[in-house]
Image 1 (cartoon, helix red, strand yellow):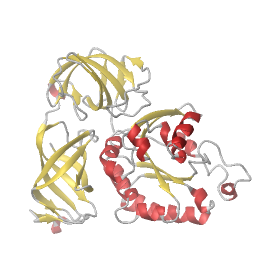
Image 2 (image 1 turned 30 degrees about the vertical axis):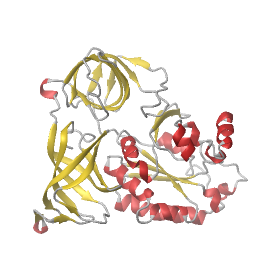
Image 3 (image 1 turned 90 degrees about the horizontal axis):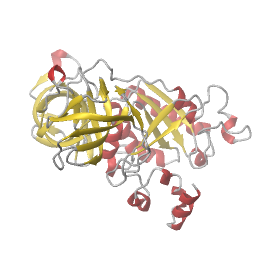
Image 4 (image 1 turned 45 degrees about the horizontal axis):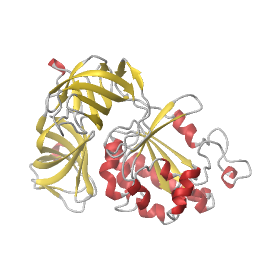
Length: 412
């Protein structure tokens, strides 16, 4: 930590010292913003191990944030309580609003909100209550999170992160007792229910390529269904490359997942891994250059084979978009760790909520409507209908730097 403080001060960014613990990239440090997903893990006082994916908040790097959200079981939303700063982030076009909508659309239903920098508001209970009131309405009624908990903190001064504030601290005047937990205590008590089960067909989504050669492949991945064992014979879709699992380990990496930084902690070898596990996977096979990329999916053959597709039906909810969505509109499709260009090839219907008012073959999709559409991609991709695998069936669409819709695949 001392070295981070020295190095950041040398660049005139002393207040960024704590961010440098996870921002390992030189460009991230010089620009003062998180650009890529960084991984680390913590162990709580109860012994629970929590894996943390630090996602960028800047609007220019939302695609990277999405790749982190697709791997998450729960979310920690950090908001700036400084007067004016919160309003900028939450008002129309702000990143707080878009991040919350995206995280929920991608399947995360449990959220902790860290109300940060409360020291800049003199630890005001009125300011804290004001922000909680605004966010509660949006997060639970508009966005639909099932579990939301707020906690006041100061990240810079370490207040209420691991230990409760001392009795003479201004926060302790109104935030104390068993119903006033620290951030780590909230994380420790967070109820987690995975949408993936070991009974499902095997689906392992590739998040990052760690090492590749003509015959050996090492990837960071998440098991989104079923279970995998050392020695299993699998297929890497959509190319249907035959592979054999040589080694498995629970992913304890604590470095950026960017291709330029591969400082990976020594993993613990496993013989078997189950749905919900973040893993490092070593496989043998015949691999062409650039034939493996994030968004590839491992599966078994036979009845468990995942058939690739280039066209599917989706049920979307449009966001608060500036321009309506037209048939033939081009967009960027995000599903699990996959990011590919696509075309909204057909507008089937708009569902305002009543069957009698359903509108068939609409000319366009306005803001804040539910609709059935057909999506076509330039290449075959590995996705699945939502009722078969929730994580492979959730999607988001972005165009011209904004998220325009999110939804689920209903027929792939």
